[in-house]
Length: 167
Image (cartoon, rainbow, N blue to C red; front, top):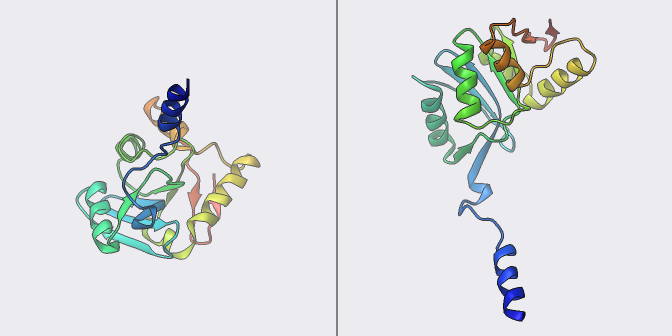
């Protein structure tokens, strides 16, 4: 009996380890994407990085080199889109970057400047309040992508330089 309990403890109390120290990673809070331009905002770093690359994944690799850290995208809270292929971008974010289903999506005409002029946390808060007050449609990535795939109007909130959301 003691062997069974000891074996169970070994299995259940081993913890989880990826072998990567969380301090050696940069966690994306928001990404603003328009064509080949990508701007990243991170959780801990007070840093916003803008890059131009052939693909979103190339931009991520370039940002990793610039930061000297591996980038983790699984906690991304916000994707700001500009002109471009919204469907492929959002599918990539959801399927490849594994952003959470609750990740908010918005549109901006000045995509590169949005994350430089305003903190991602503030933008996410504004979007959440706008949804609660029904000033805008639900704008989580799953809902938005579903509308795009079904040929419906996606109704993305518009972010302006003042941070105001228009329907």
